[in-house]
Amino acid sequence: MAEQLPFESLKVVDFSWVAVGPITSKYLGDHGATVVRVETEGRPDILRVAGPFKDGVPGPNRSHFYGDFNSSKVGLSLDLKNPAGLDIACRLIEWADVYFESFTPGTMDALGMGYEKARSLNPSILMVSTCLMGQTGAARSLAGYGFHAGAIAGYYDITGWPDLPPDGPWTAYTDVVSPRFISALVMAALDHRRRTGQGQHIDAAQMEMGVQFLAPQIIDYNASGKIVSRNGNRSDVAAPQGAYPCAGDDQWCAIAVDTEQQWEDLRLTMGDPAWAGDDRFKSVEDRLSNHDEIDGHIGQWTMDKTAQEVMELLQSHGVPSGVVQRSSDLLQDPQLAHCNLYRYMDHPEMGNIPYTGHQFRIQGYDSGPRSPAPLLGQHNEYVLKDLLGMTDEDMIEAVIAGAIA
Image 1 (tube, helix red, strand yellow):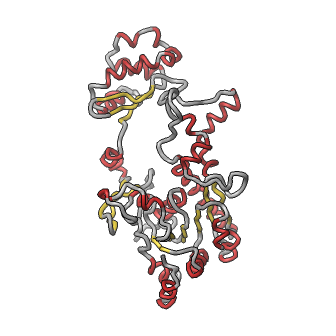
Image 2 (cartoon, rainbow, N blue to C red):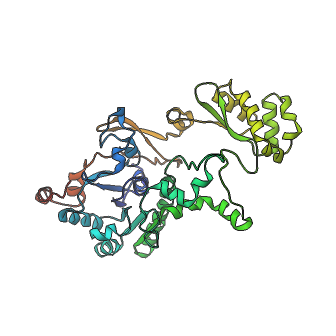
């Protein structure tokens, strides 16, 4: 008997692009929903033209940046500015349970696809609008990406080193945290609809979702007036902490001592060198004040060992530590392989490539992904004919009218 997938009867139309909307709809698709990703050749998702490209060869169907965010979906190419295309979009909204969009506030209303229109077509529709600053307020029209929302939320000022300009989180921060909030919001809204029959419009402001992870710093400022700023890899309350050089080309191991016992264990693992017994390193306050000197000594100890050796040695003595891994290391990581995080699937143009799964496992249930990302317009006929019930004549007329583009 085939396994029952949690969202297998859920129908989703995704008009969003780049990251937040597509990652969220991918989540639903990976867990069984039918997700129609709507795009246009006239203005393709910018991730389709951003690397990395398979074998370094650019092409709209060769970006795995796009691919990893769009597994388990079917692809429809549709011109929303064409009246015939808009008519098909409205039919998709009638068909769907969930409707995603991620454009500047007012864009979908101007196209004739705003919430009031969607609700008139489908009274129980659950519409999700996600943008940087939300659908209302003075900053509603601010356009940009997760880098900008991350900066406005406060992450850039506290990430980096004190003697350098703000560095910021490595990626477009709110792009990758917001889908986790929105997925939960969608599930709650679906449960509400199941109980009441009511749909709703979710206004998901990425800046607001991102700022949640700064709650401790905000509370600290409200309570004590303390303003947190850049401090590299170090803690304000424990030492030593940092990434230390190891044998090889640009190889590192992160070490984070949180307790006095871990400091004693680190000393013993290093052979209890004479320098570690200096009174200047006795208390955590002392170690915080002399962190640079401690880092120099630890770096001397790690530099002739591989990062893996350092990690295994320290962990065996109870000291928190971890190899600083690259993406190529992650694909070979034995723990991730054990968890089956990366799923290799055959893409029509890129061939057999890995797609990222999910960070949890449920006994007796495979969370996906279900299928590789679609080519641009790959499933036009399937969507129009099988999902929307259009006839061959209807489809030919739509093509002639320029709707399928």
